Length: 592
Image 1: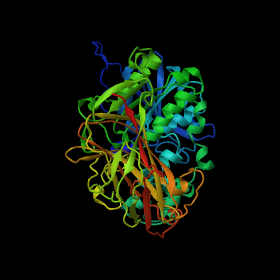
Image 2: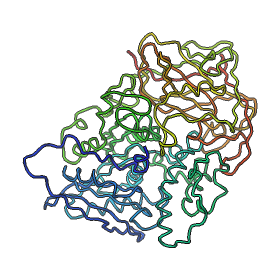
Image 3: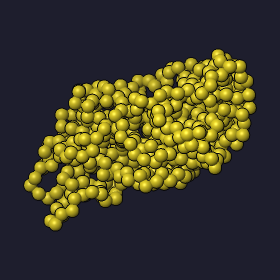
Image 4: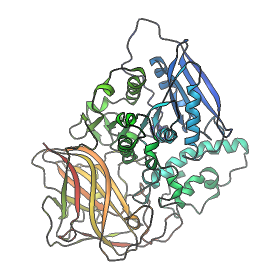
């Protein structure tokens, strides 16, 4: 996973399947290294250029990456053989490019300049597309909002739509594991560059707390440690802006879908850390892109793992031979074969959406996302007041509640529920991602569990999942988490998708509003989306708690930000599920 995480958008280096055989010798590929481009403000960015050594002109595929352009050589050679010029550029302040590295800040202007530059290169036919995922997906989206004249298509893979809500925070909670692991990995190149310029410039022995994984350390800003200020000042800025304010709005793709005027192949993944943002990108561009052609030209492909891994086996689950069919390189090139070379492949003739259906473990084409035929179905939470642990009396049922006893648990920030699998990045060695057995977590008294009886037939859930939860806390602020789980007859509890809400941001991520202790509130917990067939004999389960650590930072229950706070208190939290407080899991059920 570390390879994928830190090279997010560098497409897999395996050979591209399906390149037509020929009796002619393979064309010679010429490579120019570290070709300089000057941005509008004078910064020098450097790129490698791959093309066939002929007099012909070709469309250009551009990747702008913070993860070292050298890693793209394998894919670039294959794509050049396919009939493209490939340009891979280190973004500003990374590896061979000059300037300051600060995520998102320069990607719109630099991306525009790079697109127009590559369009004018010798042997370019003027059509430019972009490719890659994660942050490299961000470089595409941020460039596209400036609508450079020669950009003709993009292919953003597993990337966000809003760098507050589905990059740095989710539901108001800080994405601690991702923010610290990703930033720590990027800090190495920054350290190398500073050390080269001045070997005495960096003081202190710790970049971020992830160095030796003391994740329980408080405060999260490390007291604004000097090394962090020098190597990753943006990490401190992220902590300083917990609400969705103007700092975040300046880079929000969601605020600017109408500025994007090109077709996109959006690639998402069920267990990916940016799944929610990827799906919002597709819907936003389909509905609001800047012209009719762009709106009609949107395509969506949803695979399984993304940053959580690829191949047939992801996490603890073998998804079968169909899962192994997915090849990101091939999908990218097939997209541009259709868009730039006019080939009549599946993107020209098929439905606009293709998804992998888990449980059934097969691919399926859809007319829309979410599927219009999905029926929003409420599974109501029930218990007699003892739903703590999987051995408790918590039930999910289509029947509505009447008079029922509440469920109580104590959330202690000093002993949070540990993250077990799920949509994680960027260090699988220390925290494994993807589908994992949740059984151990379900033995904790602070995990409230509601399950259906074993199903008497297969039931498919495909689309967005939400938990409507009525709850109260003894604290002025706390978190509520939810996780959708597929439980096999053998007891394997497979996590499917999950979500969180920080109570003070329950009304809006732009404005914090404290709780009144003891008062019941309604919380809408967005669990993002899934596509899964719960097989006959399986059970549908939802787990409710108040922590998922270290994926998310611990809510200290004080109402103050954990970025600078070191104090914590326990919270007594209550789940309501009666006629006046109809807590329910909303599932998009596909009719049989």
